[in-house]
Length: 553
Image (cartoon, rainbow, N blue to C red; front, side, top):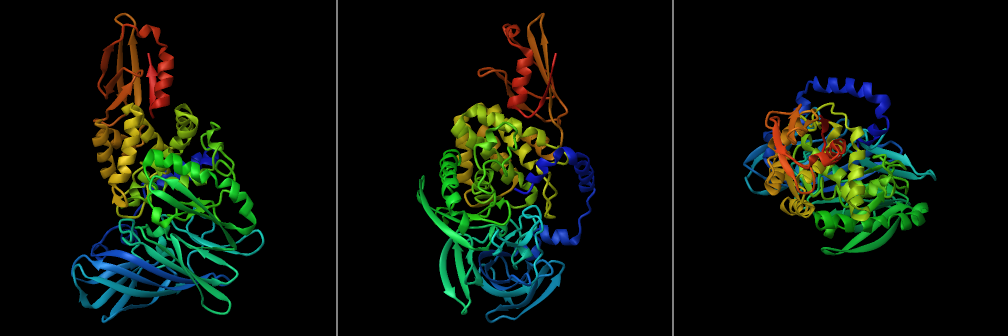
């Protein structure tokens, strides 16, 4: 989600982006990066089962006070474990029944030392009390943190956006994508009684906590990434609806500022169109028992599982713009479609390391292509995919360095979508392609994956040799250059790739019935009727279908 502002300043910022890319290549990582990004021995030794989070914001002082009960299983006998909580937030106490715990801070982590050894495979619960003034997000969602805002009537409006930065910016947790709490989370938010607090999943309780305050408790029953656990606080009103989907009746709830109810009633009808298209392409919505919510937010949007942040001002496009420049992006609301696509890619299928986030963003951006195709035809979807290409920078590789909480290039969005589109067109079997997407969501349902797993899965399902293909597009910034050389005397066509890794191969379809595997070695075929084909048109068609450049002779 967070890359999108770059699109609109691409031209004026090219020089800046290139200089920043150079700096990124030379970046030196620190112990703090490793503590945040790697699965060290004090993280691997336990598995989180559930979080029970209680928080009370102070809107005047912009502070938080709360507690987290973390229920976990010991993966081995252990006496120490690591939890994460970013400064200036701090732990004030940590308690465990029949055990004494000493805790010590190191950068943005705490090491918990247990007096009695925790036994392998046993389940434990610790209570961590915390308080402090969390990092404030100034330009959410592009920079993360707690959002302290006001609606247009001057009433309190608050939330969190912390993708990349991490949930430990506001509550103590095991802040790594590889460990989602297996049984979900309970989020309880104590607020003044003229406000409403919304969070993921279902509302399970509303109770008075004082003469002037209420606590709203929500529970999500599915595994959930910690950065997706988010409260929204504001002057909300609820719209209730439902959708008859592949797994039965799906509960739909829309929470919007009370003066936007009429706009939302009409505009959010797009949700059912989205669900119909995405269940067709990807299979059932992955979180039926937690429902689906859009929650109006004080920032543009984010893929918070079962409670998607919506801030696109009830407009089509991306704040009224079409990212592809084709016109197709103005026929639907970007935030509804894109952020909902993450329910399948990012929330259902989650990467262990954010270095592999192209799995989240590339497939989700391609969901926009498929949404367009479902309602307006394949040509429209292909035009949209092609229209995204000018935003590709090829500054650094899409896959970032592992173990240091570092993403790769923002090209993971638009280049990622075009990588998927290229594979689809190389396969040239749309029914099989659709089945691959559905099987992927079944195979990795609520699972943590690596890019390599998904690459192997796609290669196995398509039966295409994609090892060099993935190496080229995910680990380098090279754009393949395809040479077409037509010999008019003997009516042969020779094809060869340049600017590719050594084992690069791609299946190229010259028309709907004729294909060949092209590599960095010349491949020649006899085409006695090829003189009837416009070579320049063939060049244009190939560049439209595949992410490559073509030279024709």
